[in-house]
Length: 245
Ligand code: 1GP
Image 1 (cartoon, rainbow, N blue to C red):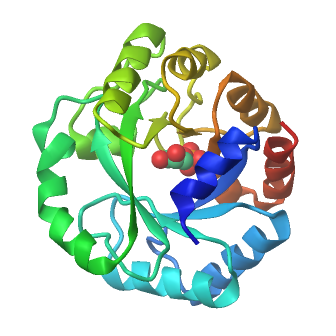
Image 2 (image 1 turned 90 degrees about the horizontal axis):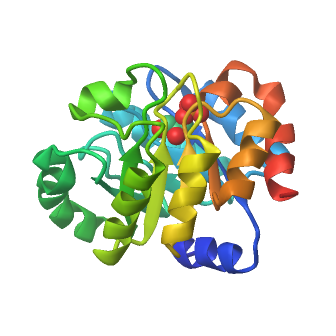
């Protein structure tokens, strides 16, 4: 199944999608089986798999367990250029367009490109934007960049527009893993007004209301990681809230 056409089709039909983010770091087969079942029960649309510090063999294990337990599409959300693995359906090919670190804008992508070509993965070019969420996050530290200030929707909108004009297929607005505050509706709606490409929103979403607010402001795909890992009981409600938007 091709993922990007599915995301676009959902967007065109006004259907919101839910992605469960799984960070394989420090986990084992039993955990990946548990997460697969959770995803199935809750009716998620996608697994996003990735993290800042994962070793190659755990990524492989995570992907193969999810693949063996479910038919839910799996998208790699890479924390580094080493996280390329053919056992997924697609990969978000990220350019960190909110930052001014050349390595994150184009450097790592040059190194990764030939491996991606060989992998056969569907490559989804992604304008990745970190939005200030009130505290430093792993993504900020690891990327050595500054986030877009939370009270500057115009900067976010123009950044997304430039990304779309450069041909990027989706915009990912991220408050960062475990963010104190999710990306604000002001930022999401300013971006939505400016671009027609699908918008993915994640980072710090913990409640149904936050997910619904993000969808109503213009998010097409909601990504949740930490909240579901800490309290798996939340997942079903979050997915339903997104699907009912
Ligand atoms: C982080 O967007 C993801 O890159 C999800 O964040 O783990 O805070 O849900 P959370």
